[in-house]
Image 1 (cartoon, rainbow, N blue to C red):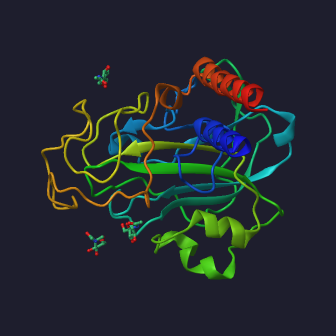
Image 2 (image 1 turned 120 degrees about the horizontal axis):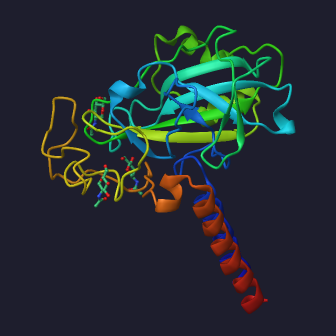
Length: 287
Ligand SMILES: *[C@@H]1O[C@H](CO)[C@@H](O)[C@H](O)[C@H]1NC(C)=O
Ligand SMILES: *[C@@H]1O[C@H](CO)[C@@H](O)[C@H](O)[C@H]1NC(C)=O
Ligand SMILES: *[C@@H]1O[C@H](CO)[C@@H](O)[C@H](O)[C@H]1NC(C)=O
């Protein structure tokens, strides 16, 4: 009983700290600094930040924290959209938006500061051919899709697609990908870093803010904030407005909490301290 309780608290703590949307596998616990801002001091979008799709059409720049464990490593970048054609009907998902192996820290790399003032190193995503070149979001649904970035350590010097994934080579067919199956087939470990943003057909945003009360399955009344015009139901929208669609947990949507969406070091830390406190208390009381 007590151990069950502690286990679920641990699960809760893990979820709260995840950088990937809750329920998404594989999950990443550490933040992947990705940006569409090519300026010298780029702004990074927050986890779950909302974008208009025109802002996210060109290949983003990816960074890693300047830590010894990443020195000399080669990485694979993956980007997927699990919400195609819409969050409430993901029968075409995941869409594979980008698969780039052979990513390295170049000599004399650009060093920038994270929002918390930590050193970040820009990775070179252009020195080897992409297996699947970057393609920007074109969500047909009003409901924002999740665009999830994962960074993996590449185990060997060269990387080739597992046989059952060869049809993705070149990116002509990007549908029904599974990051989870790909990781297993390619013999990769869990992603070392992850992040995601949101974008829908008519969403407006620069990635600096997430949205509250975001949950899948309902076409109307999604965002209380006017960021999504819920009255518009374009041809790509699925489900009649106001018709509740199935949202029984097959697609899980995080409700971005301030700590998750802000990606603010202090807030993250205090939330994890909070959870650790609760855990410690539970262990004290129950043991
Ligand atoms: C889900 O989307 C697919 C692909 O667009 C479509 O063929 C199918 O009819 C949709 N299912 C429902 C229940 O809307
Ligand atoms: C709505 O979004 C704006 C910026 O997009 C933000 O300043 C404001 O606080 C939000 N309001 C609510 C109620 O979430
Ligand atoms: C959840 O919904 C999916 C389709 O969206 C369906 O296949 C599945 O059986 C449902 N599961 C439950 C427990 O209702």
